[in-house]
Length: 387
Image (cartoon, rainbow, N blue to C red; front, side):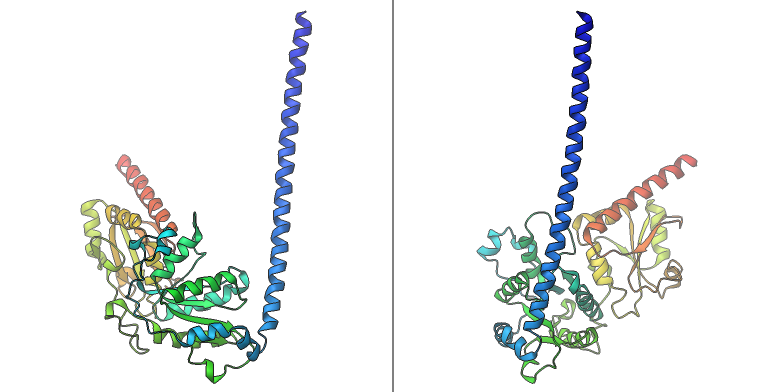
């Protein structure tokens, strides 16, 4: 009797193991098939998108065709009013219904928002736009540069409200770009349209804030001229930027980026660090670079979150230094041309805990500040135990 019971238990156990094995195998196969199907769908979508863009290229291959296809856009740009970038967008019921709060739409006179299809075909165009904006001291941003949880429309609305200039890449006739452009027009935003064509630009289009270009250098030259006409600097009482003096209008002060006390001399900062037993949070830039090592763009985004600013203020001695100062230049690696500003986390006794370019992303900024605090805490603990 016990022998049969033992055999039954053994068989049941064996069957359970076999069933578990079958379930695991089937689950793996299903997930593998899902991945394959997803890859196939992505491949098909990329192929269809490529075909659609080719059709649009044919539709706009000549200037006459381009003008026929974009006649409504031409009309909208022709009547664009002059807009004060410091003026806040009217808080409408539409914004409220989409989860936007009134305090989230304060204007940023130095922010340019780019409406562009999220396709690698347009990546080089966006980089040309970004670099041109940086050349004239403006921050440039597009909608997919950070991970957004929840409704993407809410995020897009906030950035359009904040931006002083909207640049729309209408090449490819992307419906999302057109919708976002319509929103920008409804909010009285200054808009610039860009599109690539093989033909020369007719005279009657030149004055309509539409940039039709043939290659990247052509785009950069025309876009820079338009930005210099449109862009405003908040610290200069919203006077238009002049080509010869716009760099001097970009006053570098620590309170523009940090909260709390900011040091500009390394010796004084080091003394404060030793007295307070805090590490130094040093940002170094080259004042001779046209954009001051992308200080506004990179450090502005790095410290965009109030949480990040508070962590830096409470845990570090904040320092902003020019590379022309020998005390700061010795912290810059020889192979770093400071095209982008440099972050150095240094202990009170001069030991470098972290050194890297300032990452123009608020999520990365918060992450790296927390990592630096952790590194200092561990280093301080080890040093205390050793002594």
